[in-house]
Amino acid sequence: MCNIVTFRFTCRHTLRRRRSRCNGTKHKITASSIKAACIAESFLTIYLRVECGPCQHTAWEDGWSRKLERATEFLVKLRQRNMPGEDEVERCVRELEAEYASASWDTRNMFAPAIKRSVGRVKHTWRERAPSPLPREVFPDDVIETVRKEWSQMEDHEYDGNYVASTDPIHPVSTDYSHPLDDDDGSWVLQHLSSEDVQAAGNHIDMDFNQGSHWTWNDDNHQPQTSTPTDGPADTTPPPPGPHNTQPPLTSTRAWYNNQRKILTQRKQTDVTKFYDDWLYISRCEMRDIEGVGGRVICEPDGGRVR
Image (tube, rainbow, N blue to C red; front, side, top):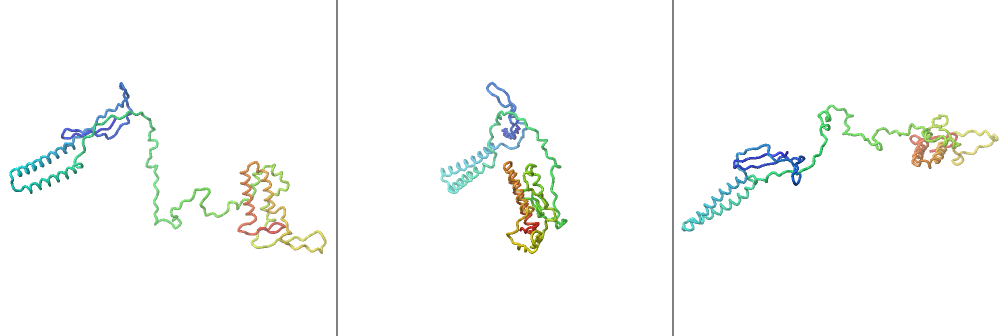
């Protein structure tokens, strides 16, 4: 039902005000239509010891009308009898009329507006069942209040300036500058190759990155010593070493990676995406093994150096 309050004034006039409107879900069937069953009856009547706005405005208008009427009649009698002081009385009447015009304009804010129309019946609507909001009620224990920092009791390392670590896996924030592939030995490639691919490569060479007898890391430009020839006469002078007469052996890093690329090429038609991912990874490993850590030189076994 609608929530209606009735105000009753001393002049016996009443004013009904609807505080809230019902949805009109209850209905009744008449001979011609279906109407809402809500009957707008007030549940509370408040008696006020004042008159209503229109009655107060009427009393105010009556008082000013009688005052202007007496002033006008007095001025007419002075003119009929030709008595002195006609000009002064006429000036007072004009001032009184101007005062009434100004006061009547201000009465729009002095009294309450006219009585509103009666409260009408609400329109009929259909009832909709809504879930109870009690399961979503928030209790005081559910609200976690942040603890304010006491700057006088904080250590130097705690002044982070409201730093928030990044949660983006593509752009993580970290102070670890080590490369993810520093501890990788390249054996992951064998896990992606089938037994047929491994057998198809006749000159496949096992990885020998961890064999300390063949691989050395040097910080200088040291050249590996050339071996003494055992074939041919003893008085034969070996040719001087040059940049064009030294062929990389099959156990070199470049030859091993070239062999892995040949194996991956056979799998290009099977899975193109996997092919390019492995190709990129092999290229990165080759760059790391050839350049070395910090740009140092890696000496090839029984061969030249590669930067």
